[in-house]
Length: 109
Image (cartoon, rainbow, N blue to C red; front, side, top):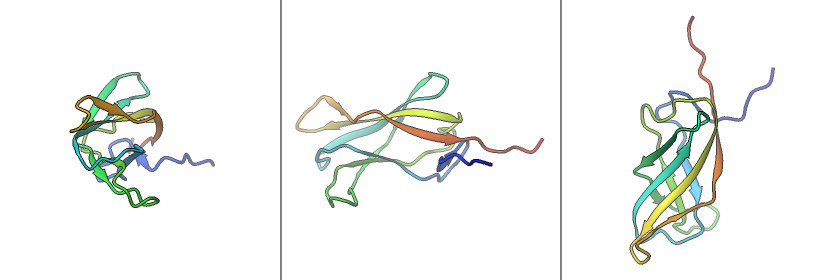
């Protein structure tokens, strides 16, 4: 039996955070979110992402989103991209697109 490498599963609340490396200083970030394309193709914006310290560099360059009830509702590969507004820039900036694997949840029949 093979297990997928998903740390997040459909319906998870208090799931592991979604953390995206931005490579830019987020000290002056005024808004952050994660743009996500679900396996079905539906696009959603997960608002309320915060700046956190990158453990490898000790710099405030990572964007973190804590999944809320109802956010993770499809199994499969999600495309995710961070979106941040920095005070000095004014316009939203974006991270590279990454893949987040979401596993299924077993249900009682």
